[in-house]
Length: 238
Image 1: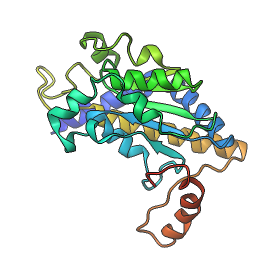
Image 2 (image 1 turned 180 degrees about the vertical axis):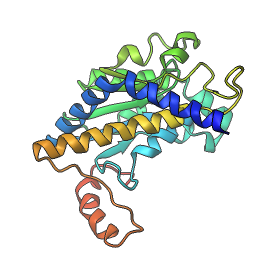
Image 3 (image 1 turned 90 degrees about the vertical axis):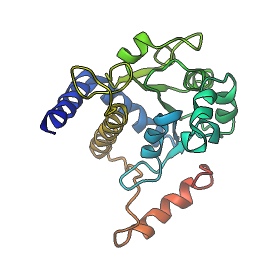
Image 4 (image 1 turned 90 degrees about the horizontal axis):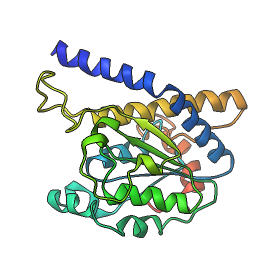
């Protein structure tokens, strides 16, 4: 499987190069939010929820993340139903409306196609609240996806991170892709790239970045309790 391994490595190299400046800008946004006591909201639907899970309550992850979630948009609660739900108008406002905003928050929305009402309306709701929006999406996928909202996620974002995944998401075999979706890998890579930059920027400015420790290492539970006490009252999912 050297061909596939090389394909993934080449793709991530392209993603890193293409998004270098945008990643720095997102890390700056996050740093400002953390310094002001804000939260990082993360949202998505369907399999983009895998990226939302990556942002929330995991070892090495940001403790100040508020995951935006509704059972209807999760495939594990019904595959076909989740596809229908992300095309519903109004569901995003319902989910977003439950968050107690601080005025210093940032929204990150993951959506490969960036065309369905749920991710688009999440971004619009955040913009209407005066909140910066980071879109993690694919310009090649967006270019051919059927429009189901008046605008696209990218059009309602302050900063766009481009996963560069092909329409349909599959990557293998290269000559006629039918399997091996790359969006989840690219999403996780971009998110980790933000965190790496954030830690460096925090260290340079003397700002402590609130990061979870693994609960499966000595002292992990004790270290995490500090952030559970701090963010638990503001993030119901904790």
